[in-house]
Image 1 (tube, rainbow, N blue to C red):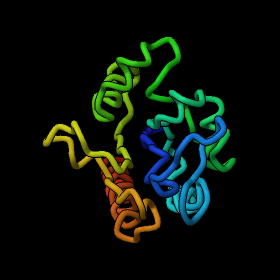
Image 2: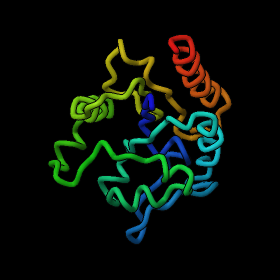
Image 3: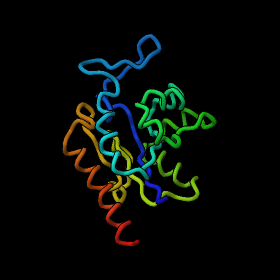
Length: 168
């Protein structure tokens, strides 16, 4: 199987970015609910069974990988193969890294490497200019509800499927 990895942030992607820890639990402050746009991601990925998800969200640092994965709908949970954060890593050092550096570190430690990868995130700080095309950037308040973001992700995945078909 030709593996495609989607690095998934939560806040500002599958729900608005205004999530705070209240009484020990992540709470969306404002309109909506946590993971309100996760179903949109499930719909987009339905046509691409070879896409796997790596969690690239601070939820893994603060809540742990298992809890972060469990917060997703079952269809997305089944695609999750890991996280850019591991509890054996130095937490402070990891959080000081840009999201791009966290992803590059994860990729450097994987063999075999994914055929393609893309990140969906509202944070573009620290991304290398030459790799910005690997980022589907969201607006923190609109996340995946933005049709242009959905289109960009669909187009990226479709391009890779066409490339795969052409090389077969």
